[in-house]
Length: 467
Image: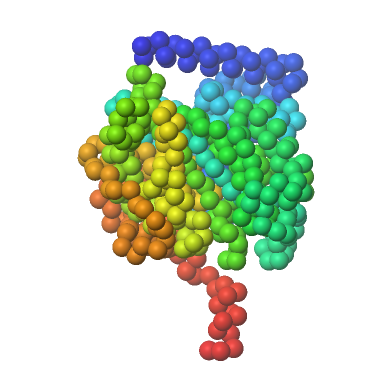
């Protein structure tokens, strides 16, 4: 069976390559984007010309400096990474295309895009710290015990009626949101920006990124788009492609969009909820559903998986909330959870069980829209598989207002606390491997140090005269 699958994959790859080459020869495509996901969840890479594609075998990939998986948001190169540093000269790695991700980009003229996986210079060994490789590693573990995760992202964001350039010139103050009232489910208010949102939905559909719905969210200019569920790797690819594409479309329309978890202390935070279920790799059925005639529709697999997620949420919180700003979103009665409990259709809980029969699943309400999907997905899957391996018992369903209970485990309140949880964890290295665990711990510490050394407007306003 493995050989047959391999042959099938090879045929699809050949057909896709031939399609691209033919489109280049016919003048339909003249630019191909070869991109990969960096640590911060950004799409990085190169644009290669059609002529280059005709003269070279794209299967060999393209080289890039390995520092791209060891930078901060401002593209600085912090010291301390084992995988890339000046002692090793910041050498190259190879980005090799995954032909299953080939897309024609509707909003860019004569342009195609292919997601790449990152390899060492031998072109064979995957680079362990690359986010897409981290997720693929967890999916292989799931496959080995007979499961295939299916996932979907719900992304909230703020739209602004000004460009990224003007926002930068204003030093990110006095931002003009594309709306002036709470827009939650408000169709009239959403109409103001519907021409742009309709264009986004149409473009994404043309690119093979199915969007189920979009709606106004709970503050001025805030909106949500729900992506259709898919196998976990494709779902993460869709998540990344949507965010990148949304920004490009906004640039073309003299708008800007932000997926920050908390763009302003007075505004509602932007969530990045994740829906997850497991499919039985042999039968194709939902492994979370116990059956119609059982007293509890949640199967033993689902209960153990969720028990693992609940047990190790704090350990993996750097992958759910990766930035200093991520933790500003967690606040009581804010629609963002603070407690690590599960409940049925209860939006005060960190984990919400929804759906029924074949659609039974759980929703993680913990990540913000600033998450890296490959890393957040990996943490959920890794923690859940650990729950199955350890045969953990799911605690009883939480009833009532989870915000009001001081006796349950809480999500870390800061990046600093999350760093301590990661550092002291007994499972992070076991699940992700030492190299990955150390790499992302260092990234978080670099981000925390940068924040700790910065003097903010708040501090000047509070202390300048009064001290």
